[in-house]
Every structure is written in structure tokens, then in C-alpha cells.
Length: 306
Image 1 (cartoon, rainbow, N blue to C red):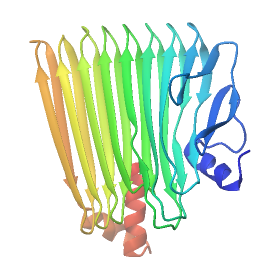
Image 2: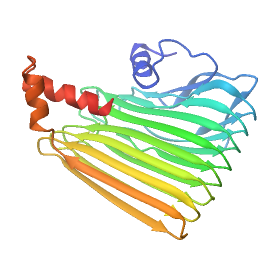
Image 3: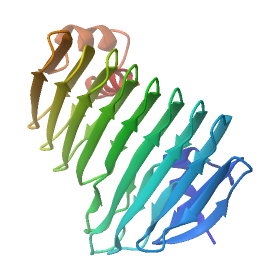
Image 4: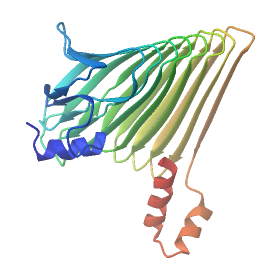
């Protein structure tokens, strides 16, 4: 049974007002609360550890899987292992995400280890949103690990968002790409207070003609700390690009570390990074329209992370 807090969290992390259409597994306070499968998508509980296997039949089109997690029990700490098997020639969407409501004194944490095996010529959109709330002294901690293994011609779009309430996070994304595969990552992160956020990306571009594009947009406020690192290994004729754009405010700290390694003469690898404050002319322009300085800053930040 999902209570009102759980329903509110589901709205935040998965945009769900009710149980979704299609396959889903909803996890609440360490237990599976609701599950549904379809003719093309099966969800099976793991027997040796906490987590599920999601098996999507080859050729499945225009179907979705929702696997949100919500925690409202202060002090609860869990690690969940989910494996996704996306068959050849699929075109599907997977919506994950975790919301933590902590009004107690104990730290609440969720670590999700997600492994994706994306078949030949399959297309996958993977959406992951993290959200925290609650006025307790206990921290809200999330440490997601994502492994992406793309077979020949596979294509993945990963959208990762964390814009509120997470005190500590280490986000790790690891990918291997075969011939002609393509991976696009769009990350958006906002930290404030004394929050800390680390994002680590490692991609091995192993197949001829494969490509990887990682774009991270972040805003760091107050005394928060962020670190972004990316490693691209060009092991074949391929193209790789990483970009980190950050707005820094107040007394925050932001760092970015690129690492590019080419072991093939036709590997093309690029890294871009920009860290800076909000431009004064942007603030002045909005303030002349009647906004206060604080309202103007929020407007700019919202547009930057949109």
C-alpha cells in the first residue's frame, strides 16, 4: 500500500499520479509494493540478492517500464541490483528514479546498481530522476551506478536529473560500445546548502563508427561541492565528446576533470568544460523587467537546467 507521502514522491521522480500503463515495479521502503508485466516485458525478482531482472523481448516497440523507488522510513539503507535485457530491434523507454522523504534523525540511503544489456539495433530511452525532501536531521543519500553495454548498432539516450534535496551522491556511469553504437547522456544537477555531488563517467568506445556524447549541466549554490570527471577511451575509429557546463554561486566549489585516451589513429575525442557565475548583464536585463535579484537568479538557473 502506498501512502500519501509515497504518492507524492512518485509524482516527483516518475510523474505518476496513478499506476502506469504497461510493465512496472514500484519499490516502497525496501519492498516491492506493486508489479505488472506484459506479453513482451517480464519482471523477475532476483533470488540471490535484492533486485529484479527486466527482460524485454526482441522487436518490442513503443512500450515502457517504470521502476521507481521511494523511501519514507528514516534510517533505511538499501542496495538494489537491477539488470535490464533489451532484445534486438526494440524501441522502448525505461523510467527509474528514487525519492527520499526523511523527517527523522537517521540517514536514509539508496544505492541502485543498474546494468543494461542493449541488443543489436535496439533503441532505449532511460530516464532517471533523484529527489529528496523532509526536515529531519538525517541525510538523504543516493549512490547510483549505471552500466551500459551496447551491442552493434544499439542506441541509448540517458536522461539523469537531480535538482532537489539530495545531501550526498556519487553517480557512476560505465559504458562499452560496439560497432555503430551510440550513447547520449544528458545530466542535470543542482546542489545547495552543504550538499555534495560527484559524477563519474567512463566509456570504452570499442567498435568502428561508434559514438558517445556526454553533456552535464550543473548549478552549485551556497556551500555545496560538485565534481565532474569523464574518461573516454577511443579504441577504434570512433567519436567521443564530453561537455561540462556549471554555474557557481555563493561559496560553492565546482571541479571538472577530463581524461581522453586514443589508441586508434581515427579516434576523435573532445572535452569541453566551463565554470562561471551568472553574467551581470543577464541579471540586469531581467531586473529591468521588474524581477528582484533573487527572482532573476532563479529564472536564469531554471532556464539553464531546463
